[in-house]
Amino acid sequence: MILRLLLLLLLTALPARAERVVAGISADNIGITAAFDGSSVLIFGAVKRDAPEPEGQLGVIVTLEGPQQKVTVRRKTREMGIWVNSDKMVISSVPSFYAVASSAPLDRILSPETDAAERISVPVAVEAYAGPLGRSDGRPFAEALLRLREGTGAYSVSERAVTLAADTLFRADFDLPANLIEGDYTARMYLLREGKVIDQTHASIKVRRIGLERFTYALSREQPLLYGLLSLGLAIFAGWAAAAAFRLIRNS
Image 1: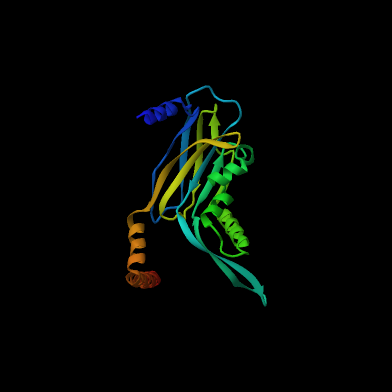
Image 2: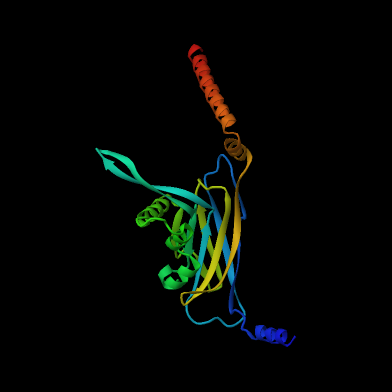
């Protein structure tokens, strides 16, 4: 009993966090249809304070992470004037999408130690998920994956893209590509001072196929033979219809 009372007194004596982040998202569900050509998500929030604002620069970082997936990275070499696959490495788990937005340059508000602990920046997060590469020459493959996905927009860093008003209100806009994969996406919001995270929160966004897109995707995965026959039949019908229309126009 005495131990419980001492523990209670200790907990009540601990100072509350001076700054906390409260955040939300504009949409927690995104539907992928046959005509889906990308989308955008607004992540917004505020800094709640229980004490006067501390001195020093306040930093805000927002990340948006897609489902994990296995990828194969191939190395090409030129042999007799032709580019061929000469080597490959399978990376068991990396984010399918990873975007970072910050209120200031990352090297000003995020220390390397905090980055390593929280896995915030793109290279650190991807390396943390990939785990041991399993081979001594694996780093060039991981770096190639980063370059490729940065080139397609699947991985991105947007410094000064978080609008921070009066060190209290913030917002960040993320553009999502048309080739999103289905799954749960996680948005994380970090408050930082002196390079360290003082508070963080997260929210989820569900990306799902809907309508005809969901039906055809499920059919291709669950009944591949039937899906192939239907696709072949549709292609034959489309060719026949085009030929019939051409004959009709020519004879008219």
